[in-house]
Image (cartoon, rainbow, N blue to C red; front, side, top):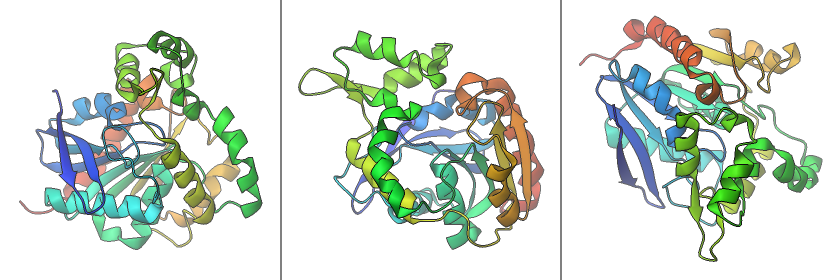
Length: 286
C-alpha cells in the first residue's frame, strides 16, 4: 500500500506526514534524529490492514518546516498533540525510535491519556546530561553514525558512496535506497546534503542535555525493542526503563540501531505481536 503525503498547518510550522489509512486502530510512528517518516514504510505496509498509521516528519526533518530555532521536546510534543487533534485522535499506539524514544516517555509522563501503548526502539540519552558535556557536542556531531549522512557532499554520487558505509544502509536494499534518496537534496551552492538541518541538530542536542526522559513511574503498556547490535546492550542501560516503566516488556531483535531498516521482517513481527496484545483492551468505541 502506497502512503499519501499530507501536511497540517500549525501556528509556527507546516508539519508533513505520511498516512496509511486502511485500518482503524490509530498508530503514530516517530522517527529518530536525522531520519524521516519513510524509515517506517516496511512496518507501516506490514500493519496497514489493521491500523490507521501516521508517520510525521518531525520539525527540522524531511518535508516539514525547518525553523531557525525552537527544537525543544516541548515544541515537538506540541506538534504531535496538534497533529493528533487534526486527525481526531484522542489516543494512539505510539512508537518512538532513538531520540523520539526519549521524547515518548516525556510525553507519556505529561499526557498518559494520549497513549494506548508505547514502543521504544533502541532509545538514546534517556538521562539528563551533565552540562559539562556540552563542550563535547562538536565531537559527537562528527562521530555519531546517524549524523555522518548530513554532508555536505560534492555530488549525489559522492553522497551515495559515503552513506553506503553507514550501518543503516549496510545492505543497500531497495528499502534502504528509498530512504536515503528521500533524505537528501541538492543545495543552492550545488552540493548535496541531508534535508535535516544544522539548527535542528544543535537545538535538539541542547534540549536532550537539559531534560531527563524518565523521572516518575509510567504505567502505560510499553515494549522496549533491543536490537542485538544496538546502543542498549548492557543491563545498566536498561535499568532506568525497568525502574520507571511499570508495565514493560523487553524484546531482543536482530539488527543494529535501525532494525526496521536492516532486519525488518523480525522487527515487524515483534511489534505486531505486542500491539495485538493491547488492541482489544484499549480500543475506543467506534
